[in-house]
Amino acid sequence: MNLTFCEQTSAPVVSGDEDVAVNYKTKRTCALEGSSVNITCSYSFPEGHKVTATHWFQGQSPNNVTHDILQGREFRGRVEYLGDRTHSCSVRITDLLVSDTGIYWFVFETDRSGTPWSSSSGFTLQVTDMSVEVSPLTVMEGEEVDMFCGSCVLSEAPTYTWLRDGQVLASLERTNQLLLEPARVDDMGTYSCRIQGHEATPSHSVRLTVTCAKIDPPKNTTAIVLGRSLQYATLTCSSDANPPVENYTWFKVNESTPVGSGQQYSITNIGSEDGGQYYCEARNKAGAQNSSPILIALQGKAGVSEAVVMGITAAIVCVALAGVAVFCGMKRRHRKPESGGSAAVAKEARPIPGDSTYIALAFKSHNSEYETLANARSETNDYTDEPVGGIYETLDEKTNSG
Image (cartoon, rainbow, N blue to C red):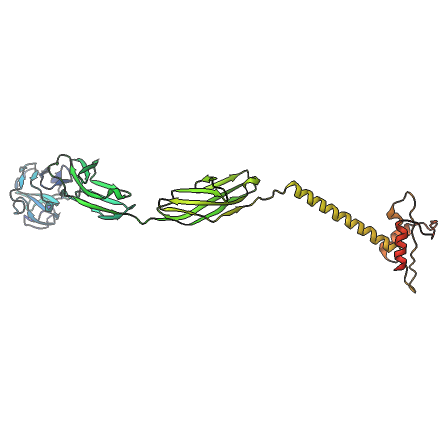
């Protein structure tokens, strides 16, 4: 079965017949301008047919071809058909031009086909010159630069040699790309390339300009406490710098010798000598800046003297409170009843030898807090009203005078 779209030889058809085929040894190739290329091709057709015409077209598809290169003026004297009218359809193109880049199709006719036959895919030819492409041509230090020797890698996969200011810089196999990442000031210069086997055809030169990046000393340098416990502390330092900070150094205030280095500084097994103020220094090639100091205070480590003072203070307070309680109790014991009052009677208490001082303080009163002590006192107690010496006498005098 044949698929026909035009009856003119300049417009071939794609055959759907299983007995019709066009095959290319390779589907594509990259060749250097000025060189030659052989497109190896074979074809088949139904038995009983006789080939009457062969063509090579250039175009995007067999439905969109313009001219036969075997007869066109653009290829006159540069193209040679190497095939036959049985099975081979190879062609040779010499003195290649960049404009020869495109897709090529073999088309043939038989005495019984009625229309031209071709394949569903063609052969892609890419022709490159010895040009150097640099992107971008001017960069700032630290940026990326891509360089290409030609527009494609030659099919024979040769070695590409790169030169800067006439001196060999690098030799790369199977790639036409040179990548500078990042670019440095000393990368600035004139670049060219050459290809193994084509040394007689050097590339033209392209100049790359690399400008110095703006550099600033560190700024906004800050030190903070990242983590803290009773036993350790971790400090961290940050800073804005271009180029980036190269070194972080840690110091203790009033000490000239560094205590640590790196963006983080850790203090372990914190002792009394570790307390104090710390700061960090951030430095790059443009200069340095110190952070404000931060305080590392000792936590939960009260000294022995402090504990002793606190204990003594507590003891004094307890003794003082006990003394006040005794004094107030004894004063209540010797207070006289008010005239015209009720049956409240206060009797002087005398200490009983061997008894506790607090048991001797017995009061009789209508107040509930004293009734228990009053009831506990025996009615047959042979206390006398005569005052005794010592503190009780003094307290009686003060009570009576009151």
